[in-house]
Image (cartoon, one colour):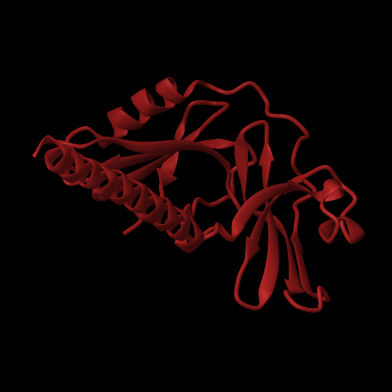
Length: 201
């Protein structure tokens, strides 16, 4: 009787061990499959001179965003000067994904801007100035976003005329639901309010 009980126990333990091994293997395989199914990112950042394809056409050390679509490889560089965005200035290369042939090159680059930023007021100062402009008009709102920008002469989002030569702080206000309610443009050098931008949807 003892021998029979011992035999049954050994069979049950063996079945349990086999079950654990099989389950572990299945989980491992599922994990592998999950990894295989994870979508690969098609976006990366490259230095122009260090990228074999882009380096054939662009010898600079500028940083480009590399985006791979179904049929193209696209490189984008959006110009900045010491942290200030230069609105509209960009370099774009489009290549055929299969042949690696250059399809299009776009260069929009102003030559009337300084190499470095002039002394500018702080972001906090700009927000304080913008808030005084919005008093009574922008009730129950908060700062959604503030950025430093050289405004383009054909800007549709910041239609200030004449186009400011100085960089500007663009101060966005939002309501309690997060919707953009107003955009105030502040000259980042002189600290003056230049006007309003177009709120984004």
